[in-house]
Amino acid sequence: SAAATSSSTKSSNGHRANTSEDTAKLVNMLENMGMTSALSAKESGSVYHKQLSRQLVDFLRKNDKLSKAGGMMTLTDVYCLFNRARATNLISPEDLLKSLEWMEKLKLGMSKRVFEESGVVVIQDDSFDDELMARKLADLASESLHGEKILGNQMNDVQSGSLGPGDRIMPAKGVFVGGITALDVSKALKFSALLANEQLLSAERMGWLCRDSTIEGIRFFPNCFSSGDFSIFARFSSTAVR
Amino acid sequence: MTATIPDSFKFPDFYNFPPFFTIQPVLATREKQLGQWRELILRYHTDLKIKTLVLHECPLWKNPKIERELTGDEIRLVMDDFVTSGHGEWEDPQTRTRCRILWRKPEQLASDIYDWAVSNGYVNSVCTVFELHSGEDVNGMSFQGADEELLRRALGILESQGKCALFRGDTSSEDGIKFF
Image (cartoon, rainbow over all chains, first blue to last red; front, side, top):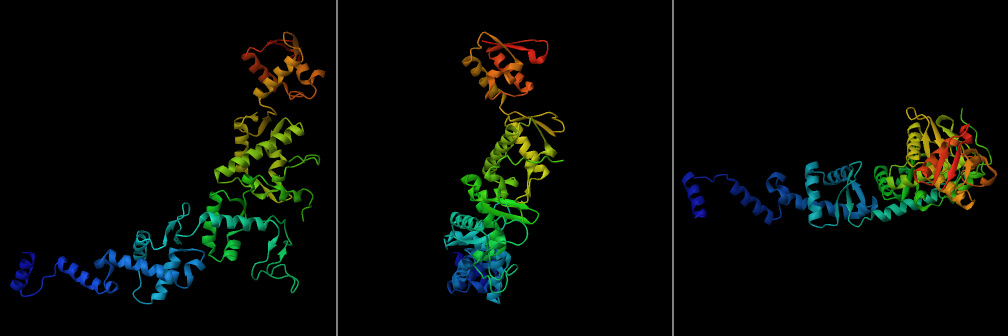
């Protein structure tokens, strides 16, 4: 009956009427041939985003991109990297956002995460463990109490040849107090300073770290308030200020 | 003019911990930190027998050894917490610049005084306010050397508990207390 109606419409008008029913049929046909990317997102709707979410995950897994970035990447970074690799058929920010919803639904091993206070949005590997990261940061912070490690090419106070990367120095000016900054973490763990900052704040909220705020910025220390162990700071009782 | 700290005062190790001079945003951590500030302020004033904390003269807010200090707002926060906890009282509640240190809370002093009175045979007998803070019998007691204002507070508590009665003397120091 429906077929009879549509065929009678065809025969009476002499040409095919462009109904939404026809579009849907067309889309279905193209999907079955695997050609969803040829359609605009509007027409094929969720199928496009579903497929895009898989493409994004594959892209981020390839060459361990996400792992190498520390297990998480901001949406902006993902957007730029992905589109740059695509060269044509660029995705829009809306496409990226819609496909994020699918990542979780399809259990692809990565999902969207929003950091509570700053609102920064990242794509995070499901295996990422906040507790583990917080512990790592607490260890870095503890290490910092024993002298400033020379990282990479930091050569400010180094006489040529006498010290190298990995050696510990005390700063020439001011009092050495320790603590780590977002920049220190970024260098040590190889992810962006923005994400390093988010992780430090997260570790602070979890009680692993506490902060030292001065005009020069914020440094993070192991949370000695909760451990109650301040013995390492006894050294200041007898040391003169430089 | 900030007072100088005598060398005899032994600072706790946490005084050299830089985060001690930043009021922590995470509440659980802040609780512990404020507890340490209360402890430090109380011990400093008790050991050095200083009765009043004058905000802008107090040398505790700044540690030159580690180049750290509390900001004005942070000092207020610490002091508000100190007073709320019952360890201090504003002499000037409107301007809040001078804080009377309650070495012991009046409730604590009240029970210390009564216990002493009982063990030293003062029940049903009289002693003066002067004897209470400066008498020979009170050596080593928590209320020895306490200022009269604080003593009266404590005695007032005992009175309301029916454990003593106060009598007017010629001078306030000569006011008598009868313990029951």
